[in-house]
Length: 334
Image (cartoon, rainbow, N blue to C red):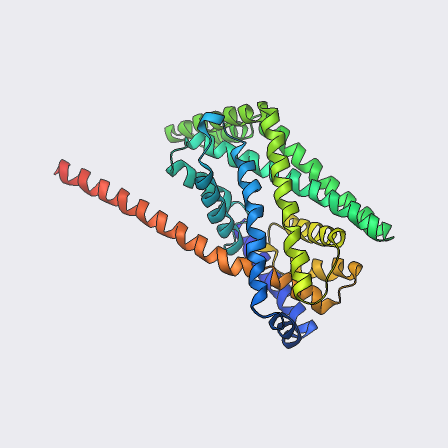
């Protein structure tokens, strides 16, 4: 998977650079600079969308064992930074989230189960958000062919997510552990198999709380919808105001296409191409659409490096603690 993500990163950056050269780097930069410091409002407008997304993840825990909101919010922030800045195919960030909340007092089995179910929740929410975008497209345009292709794509995504849901409920990790056990005959693998069965049981328990699972999807979809304000404001600040329905369609279809291309970190190039394609349907020329896409990436520059550095500091402290404990144990044995 690392090889695929490195290839995806290279292709995405190549696509992004090609689009900038095609449209004229100077022209796009001048359009961005023409708005001045007002573009810094965009990350502040985007930030509230993290609140329902965080609450959606918290719904996937037992009520008495749910992480504190602040801890979940911080873990989401740092996990997002990992997914956006590192070639981890959107998986590394989930591992980071689970590890962080386990460090902050949540049982490791429950943390692992929550992030696995949350990936299904995210996929279903992205599909629902995509269907909303298709509905907006049909309302605004007579481009039924594009709408049909988009609908089919999101339907396939939804079916894939539902299929993965049933595989998880069937005990995915236990099945993989049993297959591995046939190949690896060691006591250590028996411990891995036991943990896998425990996580499977925890996953089934999460799915059994149907109301919480459905609410998690609602919260996640709401978080995606709130990001519409970011696109609407970006267009306004760049001098090309659009209506709320246009903003919903633009944000929905572009973000969904970027999320589907998960092998490319942060959808580099994919998001920009999607903005040019979909933006043309609401009257945005290619330069403006590209500028809007780059403008909403300001949040990545402000939040993601800080999240990755914070995670590094936390892990460094944990490493120092483990090293000190090991050193003290060695001194006692001596």
